[in-house]
Image (cartoon, rainbow, N blue to C red; front, side, top):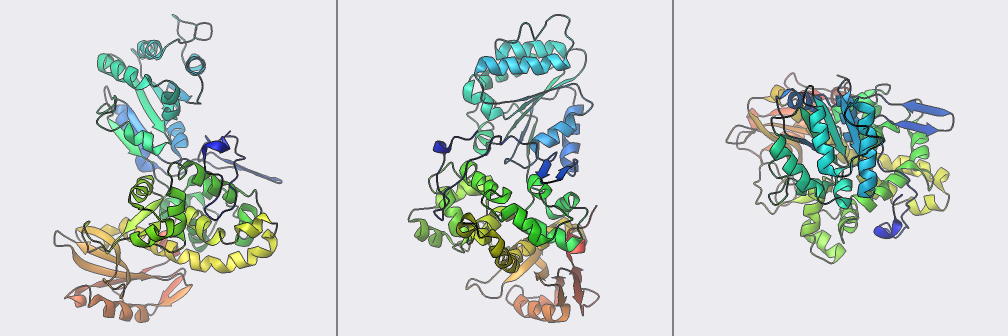
Length: 497
């Protein structure tokens, strides 16, 4: 249970936050979505590159530990459960228990996996972490044994000596055991600090893997029963978190799904938005306020400072680390440019803090049914920016097809904010523009009209606009295109692999 007094009591808009959450350690992809007369369990999908990386680590002769980390709900536990299948595994999740109870739980987990002739772990559980690691190392002398320490920050909160104990164990046991250890956690700041120079475990990991939300082509696998346009719509609303994608019921209309997920005070999206603000963004004085400011359109540093009446620099850096916020600049600019703006990087949070937050007070008062048509009308305004980012992501995914040596793909605009281009691809060390593109959240677009506008803007981008290729993106169809135009629709971006 989350203790409400540990976190802010109110949403940035002034609405009270809710904390009726009993367990935030939810399996992220193997999820049961329970509703009236409806239960579905999602199967494991995606994460193929991560599984290959973990398998490479596993095949090493004497690998040092792996570190897997990322935000809550991103699918870490499900990934590790899937990876551990058909392996001799002890999967222990830190639960904020006392050290004695934590070791007793670990002993129980180990007893279920090991048939040790030398020790009855149920009768004589581990008393110290040194003892536990030494015993597991002996049990792994003849064959590999995988030890997963999930929610590691919870373990070191009540047993701060564990980092030092683990370091000493790794130093004296390396090469003498086939015990393979994975350390996993959701507290992003703590998991980053474990990798820093002053940490006892600095330099002790052979693999560090940060898990991110699904990209559009990966999210499509969570929504196989929807057509590509509807996949684009769902991704634009809930983003790439596997759990959120699993909430969407394909047999229901968009309006009915939104009514289920956001149309009443205890709806899942509302509870989850509160939880994200309380956990991810609730660790700093201004984090929630900065997020709300950006969601409301205050995207420049000085604008955010005026809204929160404080310097947001440190807060913005924290939000960038959490990947809740993205810093955007013209793709042709260097990191030192002052032409930077900020956007909410997570589609779910952008929807929650933007479109949904405007009607939350009335949903709290019971007007969810009558507000739903208004919320539906506002969707197109919200989905435009998410669609543009999905377009850019798709171009990155297909970079090899665009041209040689693509080194960057991003948006571009002039210093005065004019002549904005949704996507520009740069090539080679000279970072020469080779493609410009525009995405419209419209059912059909006229490519000839779009490319004419891009050609005019491109004269301000490069001295050789005649050498550029054009990309045009619409939800369903791109018409009147030339043979050289790259035409992209939702069927391309959200295709099933």
